[in-house]
Length: 97
Image (cartoon, rainbow, N blue to C red):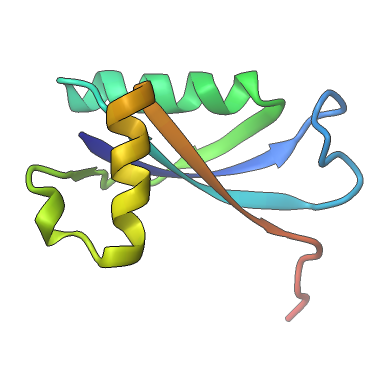
């Protein structure tokens, strides 16, 4: 199991278009290979109507679900059941410095 984190922006096909500026997406992928899991995370994000801006270089291999915080175990369980699960942490504006 892998946890891939990426940044994405909604396309016109997304239900979030013009509602949010972007999202940080956490994708739990039940896959045997890390690089393959990254490609699947990008694919599933695009299928949801988002453009992947970048993928964090470091992805996490989850070997033991007991090491996860209690509130994250549900995502692990969903990915085990369905092959993957996604969490979109959306933001509505970009802060100017």
